[in-house]
Each structure stands twice: as C-alpha cells, then as structure tokens.
Length: 418
Image 1 (cartoon, rainbow, N blue to C red):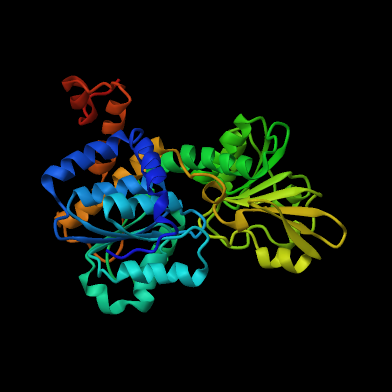
Image 2 (spheres, one colour):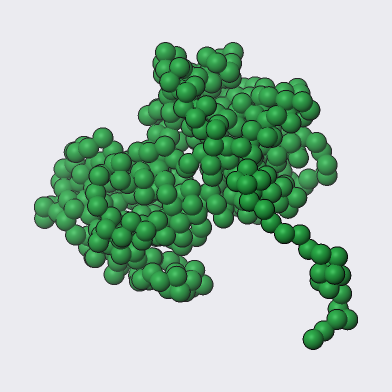
C-alpha cells in the first residue's frame, strides 16, 4: 500500500473523529452493512479525489467494505484533515495521498498517484481528477466504466466536456440529486460557510451587512444562515429569476457595484471566475472581509488585490490583510479557497450522510451495469434518490403517509373532475 501522509502518529486522533462522524451517518452505515454482505465492488478499483475529511473517510470505509480497492487524494489543498489521512492509512489500510497545505505540484502528483491504480470508477469533487485523466492519462481510459461528481463546479465543467464531445465515459452528477443539493448545498454549505468565517475572524454577524454573490442552493443556504445570525443580507445575482426569488425571500438585491460600497462581509459562491475583482475592491470600506465558498480559488480575483495593495500581512491564521495605497484594509480569508473547509471542518456529518450515500449507490449502479450508459452526464436515478430520503427519515424516526388505492386511481385518471 502506497500513501503520502503528514504524520502517521495522528492516526488515533483521526480514528476517534471518524467514529464520531459515523455515529451521525446512519444511512451510509446501513449501506455499508449491505455492502459487506453483497460485496458489489469485488475486484473493482475506485480512484477518489474528494475533500479528505471525517465524512469522506466513512465513504471510503463503505466502498472498501463492498470489496473495492480504493485510492484517495484531496480535491482541495486546504481541506485535508491530516489526522484523518493517518487513520485511513494506519487503521483501514487505504491508500491516501493528501497533506494539508500541499502546493500545486504535489496536489497534481497526488492525482496521478491515485490514477496509477488504473481505476474502473472515478469519484470527483470539482472534476480535476477527470480532467487530468482526459488530458494526461488517456492510456488508462479504456479501463474506466464510469464516474461520479460531487459538486456544482465539477458538474459545470463536465457538462462543458460533454457539449464539446470530449467526455470519454459516463458520469453521474451526484450534486444534482435532490437529497444532495436540497440539503447538502443549502443546509450544509449555509452552516459551514458561516462557521468558517466565524472561526477565521471571530467577528459578530449581528448588524453586519453580508453580501452573498450567487443565489443558487449554496447561496440560498448561506444567506439564510447569515440572516439567522442577525446579519443584514444583500444578494448579488445575474439570473433575474433567482434575483426575484431572493427578493421574495426577504433579502435586499442590488448590483455588485452598489453592494461593494456598503458591505462588511463578502461571500462568493457562484462557481465562476473573478466575481470579486478590482472594480469592487476599489469601492470597499476599510476592514472589509472577503471569503469564498465556491469550489475553486478563482472567484475572488486575488491577483487584482495583490496588484492594488502596497503591502499584505498575515494577521490571523486564516486571514491575510491587504493594505491599499489610501490605507484601507481588505481582509482575505483562507487564501480565497473554500472557507468552510480552509478554516473549519466542512459540512456536518448528518448532511454528508445523504451526499455520500448518493456517491456509494451511484457507484454501485455503474458497477452493476443495469443499463448501457452513454458518454454523458446523468442525474442520479430517482429510485436511489428516494431510497436515500426514505432511509434518512427512518433514521430520524419520522413517519410519512402512503396514497390510498382511491387516491392512486384518482391521480392516474382523467375522467374524474369536480
């Protein structure tokens, strides 16, 4: 077994935290128990490029329980929890290549390391694994039967590959499952983004003007949680329908130009590039805080900020302060990377329970070969989505009703009217 780990002596601490997360992941635990008996991945190699957290560790344990040979690397240099890596290597004998704070060269070296197992299935969070495979490792492509993608940014990239006719194998967009984006993106990202900002800064949200760029599911959750902390929330959007929804949800909606001059805290969460840039930095008030909760560190134009600043310094563990020529200070959190993982621990285990249940069952669906999938991006099959929701409700001891025979007949007919 090969690996790249910061410190194996952290394994004990990592195991305790992984076990703590497992207690809050009942759906994945049920799936693991079935996998242990049925072994659906016997002889199957899975390469996973995901955030290396306690929750991901439980997904890796589940895949291994199903018979898979698993290799894992980080999908973000700052999201890796080194004690989790140590535990997976030491206690679970899983090949992991991830070190918190690794540079770009080491990051891609790790991606190539997990591709060295010549996987049949890829699991991605942001599509760096898939793009590297397509660009640099095409000699092993014929062994890949399918893959899964965890996040919005990755799905955007993969759909672009599909539209350009270069996607070489089918991918299931786990991000688009209802039990993923309704819950993980809204409640998970919402809570963990606020958590990351608080841990990095220890600021008071109550009374602050928080500007959220993007009102997708992640933006909705972040706006909701910031308001819950007492903040005055402003939403910036390019989509008129989403902007209207934000207004109807009770938020202020304005242009980025206007918001830049009055905001105290700025959060980008769009999946796009240069969302916050020079024209915005020029208008920001002294002490403004800028953070990103989109997948890549491109949403805040850091080169623009560096060019404008006369100096910068690290004032807290996850805070870089840029001093502009007129003396104004702009504080960048977590190097512009995912603040919920750079400064905090990511989503709570109870919500990742559903997201990673989707990963596990989608991988099983691909392996089982239930249908001939084309080289395109698919949504998670509805039966998987609904089964995960049912299992989650059972774990929460919640009961729901079923349609009566009379109701089923009514819904399937057209003759019965008023």
